[in-house]
Length: 127
Image 1 (tube, rainbow, N blue to C red):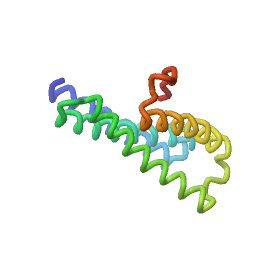
Image 2: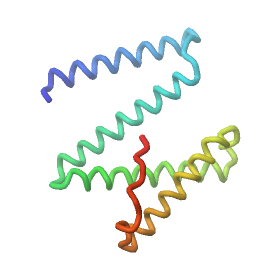
Image 3: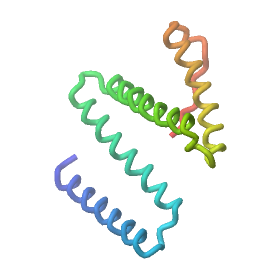
Image 4: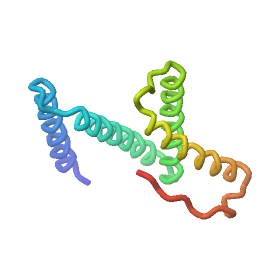
């Protein structure tokens, strides 16, 4: 991937951000559109950080996995804080889904740490 391609992609991202900012100021951007954009920006940011870590590592899959685990820790701590403070009210459906995914993750962690991953079928990938 060359620098001209990356420069063009950055220009496209800046233009998209400016369009969204205009929508916020003139009231045409919906809360769902803003949430979708926030998630997208977060994914881009975390992906770039993971890529940087992988390029400095001899084992790119392990570098991505370490990054994902560190990011999951941060996000889970944020969720815990929201639950403790009561700011998760109104997100009951999302919290219930998180609970289900967390239970699956805990099961995988137990198997991973205990060396028993070969006893469990591959989990579906959620992205």
